[in-house]
Length: 140
Image 1 (cartoon, rainbow, N blue to C red):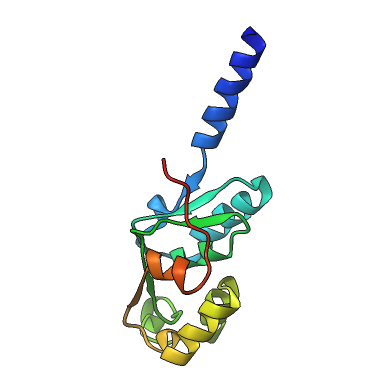
Image 2: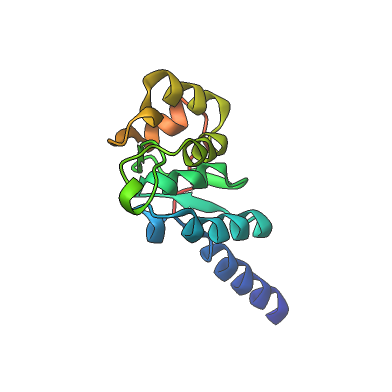
């Protein structure tokens, strides 16, 4: 019986370790995101997108075991360069983001021009679930 209790405790604590978009919410450069994306895909653990998720944070939509909370807000814009090129759209960075999205979302952001400009365009978590077919995160 004590082994069963220990197993349940380990299983619950392991599930609680599921990563979230929290520390990536403000976006940033790919070097910050790719290790977390690779880790999430390698572990197969649930990855929760919650709260505000802007820019490269939306790359987590490509994680194989991702879910989105209804209250999340995802902010999209074109990929861009660094330093003096910060206001120059970068086709490679933009394509990397598009590749992370499922076909329905990809077509929508293309049709709306979300990744042709540097200003943010927002999609709610509820819309990500209801319109684009992303899985809703379990409660709790």
